[in-house]
Image 1: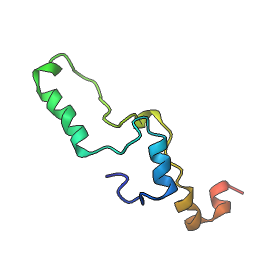
Image 2 (image 1 turned 90 degrees about the vertical axis):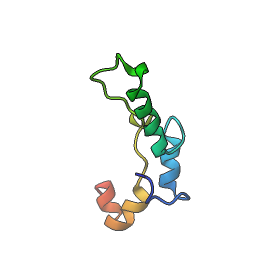
Image 3 (image 1 turned 90 degrees about the horizontal axis):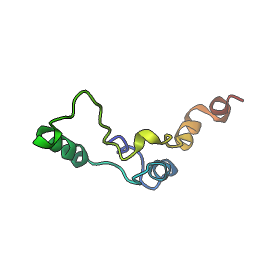
Image 4 (image 1 turned 120 degrees about the vertical axis):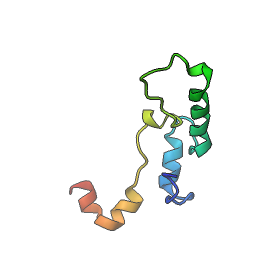
Length: 81
């Protein structure tokens, strides 16, 4: 859903996919799978921990939003020049 406003044929979207270790955009079901596990007996010893369900997103850099930001604020404002 975070990427729902980004056109699929844009460089920003391609950058996001290219820089995400799982090379995909997550779905609500991905979180549901973790929730199902956590309410079951297999998670009995899991306490006080944050579990990322992000396809490795936390390990990567963000997408390059230049093509959206530069037209709005200008090249000089973007580059500090």
